[in-house]
Image (cartoon, rainbow, N blue to C red; front, side, top):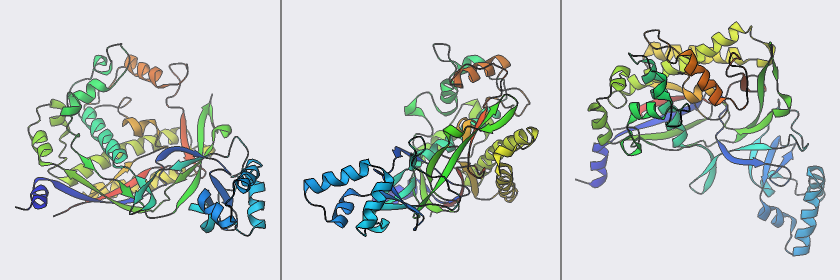
Length: 404
């Protein structure tokens, strides 16, 4: 038998068709600054990432003295550099930039003051020799793992006492729970062999202004000094990725003896529709919790269109659940919030209406998670990251298709 065909027979392979329901940001870890990293092209409504080789070629710069003159102009700031390039008729992003970022109409205050000029760069990966915005398989797998983890905990028959959430030093940690649900160590982790490929978006990125909405005593407001600009994959962008599941992982789950795994009824490998249903119910719980929270807060003005945006996603989730579709919605990436990152199980109830954590343990989790000292009764979390119009980030719809 051909080796490739033999491998295909051993593994289950799914093709994921991915659609962004809201802007997506997976950070590269880089912060871009003008004019060294990017230039604003108002007539094109774009930001261009400067390519020094292309810039030197366009300007006909070949001698070190000419390079020093250019560096001196750059040091004078974005305005001086733009004027310099216009005078030499090379103020064109296609001629002097490695790539372009679309600048939407609603970004009016993108300026070059020192405290507000950084742009958080979206991760790009090489694909056939070109850079494209990307969603790493590790990010997708992490969100999938969170959904499975939270579902397993909330389906637990017995109360989870605080000693399962403490490390050897007595600090709060979910490591013991992770071991109980997925395996005793990395080598025996059930999801270790889950191979999730990278997704490549063949589209231009754009810019959003990320705002931090904070609780100030008894009212909500924006932390204006902490607003920032992010490069994002725009809403309705599409990509594809693959998930490969080796037969060894199938056998491992079938032979699983962990009570939590039995209670959760996770049919990860046998039925991808069951997996989609599980993920959709997980995401729906988080979305409805958020809607209930802001409804109780009176839908304050600073959150903008946040609730209508979440209600639209809620309706899509309800439709997918009703249809028992082979599609699911996950939240991935920056700005997704504490509940989405953790699965929101710590303050939730099990299927038997038991508190997952005692009040004492919940207070310990809050203390461990906060960056500063706050009263234990203070709302947690007390901030949200939203874009300029209140639109949330990171919601993806994944359509699963089993490849033959």
